[in-house]
Length: 630
Image 1 (cartoon, one colour):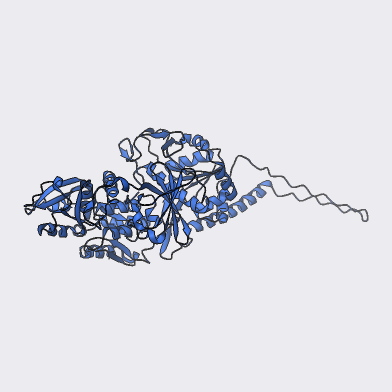
Image 2 (tube, rainbow, N blue to C red):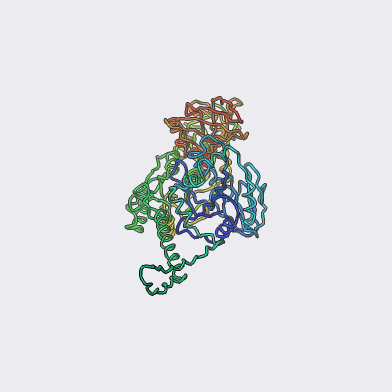
C-alpha cells in the first residue's frame, strides 16, 4: 500500500509508526495521511489521521491514538489511558472517527455513489502495548455494523484485508477509478494526484543495471590506402552517467515537490478574505474584523474590546462586538453554527454546547466566581397557595424564559413532564420575577441563586445540576491566531477579566445535560405553545418518526434529500425544500440539521424495497430538531 502525504507534512510519534505499518501492508490501494477533508456542502475541514482507499471499493477512516496504558470508557463516555484522558474531538476517539466517516461518506455520496448504498468503516488504532477495557468494543477484528472498533497497529493489515464490499460498489469503484476517487475526496486535480504519487519515496527492491555503451568500430575503404585508425575514445565512466541521471532525477523531483508544495501552501483561497496556513484556508483578520459574539449588554465588553484591539494591533483590521441583551438564543446559536462569531461568550450551556458541536475551541470559563454548576428553580410568591408542582393545574400560569434557555426553559420543561398548564414564554429572568411578583403569573422559572434569598418568593422545585459555560474560539481562525488570542485573554488585567466575566478554568462536561436536553426536546416536539393549556407530554398518536440525519444531497431545483437513520435501523429518504428547511427551528440549512436527532410528525412514509422508506416534508412544523448538537 502506498501512503500519500501532502508536501511539507512530516508525521511524528505514533502516526509515523502507523504510516510505516501501512506502507509494509501488501494491500491494493492508498492511505491518505496528513490531509484535511472538506465537508460536501460546507466550508468545514476535518483532519483525519488516515483515510484508506482500497480496491475494489473499501473505505476506512483510522484515528491513531498513541496512548500506551490501559484504556477504559464506552461509546458515549470519555476514554482514559490509565488516569490520563484521551483527547478527542466529540468526546472520545470512537465518536471522533465516526464523525470523520460521515464526512467522507457524505463526500462520496455527493460525487460518486449517489444512488448506491455503501459503507465507510472506521477504527481507532493503538500501540501494541495498549490494553483495552472499552465497554462492548470489537478488538482486533472487523464486525459489520455500528460497533466500537479498536485494534493494535500490528493487526491493521489483517483487519483491512478482511473487509469486503458488494459487487455493485466494486463495479462503480472500478468505473470511476481509484485516482479519480482520491481526487474527488481531496479536491486535488488528477494531474496533481499523479504528481503526488510519483514524488513518493521510490521502491528500492529492484535496482536497474547500467549497460555500458558499445565501442565504435573503425571504418576501412579499399579505394584509398587505409588511414591509421585512431584508437576509440574511452566512453565516459559509469559513475558520470550514474551521477547525471541522479542529478536529472533530483531536478525533476525538486520541480514536482515545489509544485505540490505550492498547491498546498501558496495556492490562493477561493475567498479573498481567507488565508492559507498548512494547506487549510482560515479567516484573514487583517481583511475582515474579528467578531466577539455576546447575548448581554455591549457596554460590558467595551473595555475588553479596546484591550484586545490594542494587543492585536496591525494584525487585526478591527475588533467588533455583535449581540446584546435582546438577542434570542436561537439567533446566537445560528451565528455560532455559521461561524459568524469568532470569539463566543456563550453565557449559557445551551450556547456552549452549540459552540462545542461546531468545533469551537474551549478558551476560558465564564462566571468564575460561581460554582462549576448551577440549578434552576420553580418559584411562587411567598403567599401563594401552591406548595409543590403536584398542585399545578391546567389553569395555573407559568412564566418561562427563552425557548433555548437551560435554566428558564429546558430544565423546567424536564421537571414539568406529564403536566398540562398555561404558559407564557420568551421572557428574561428579570421579567419573569416581575410577572410573579405582580401576580401576572403563578409560577416562574429562573436560576435558583437569583431568588433563593428573596423573601417575597418561595421555591417549590429545584432542578438537577446544570453545567456552566465559557468562552470559545471559532475553527475558522487559524491555529496561530487562536494561540495568540488565547495568550492575550489569559494575560489580560484582572479588571478586564472581571468586566467581561471570564477567567481560566475547567471546561464543563455536557454529557448528562445533553441527555436531559434531548428528553426535554422530545417532550417539546409534542407541545403546542401557540395554544393554552400546553401539554408537557406526548400522546400515543404524536410519537412520529424518530431518527438521526446521516448525510444529505442537493437534488437541484431547491430540493434537499436527507438520509434518516431510524431507531429500528431502517433508512428513510426525506425530501424537503430549502425554503421549508430554512423555517425550521435549529435546522435552517442541511449543514445545521446534519448529524442531529430529529422527529417527523404528521407524514406517512412510503415503504420501498430493502427496508427503505420515503417521505416528503411540506410544512416546517412536520420536522422537529430534537438535539441541538450531535
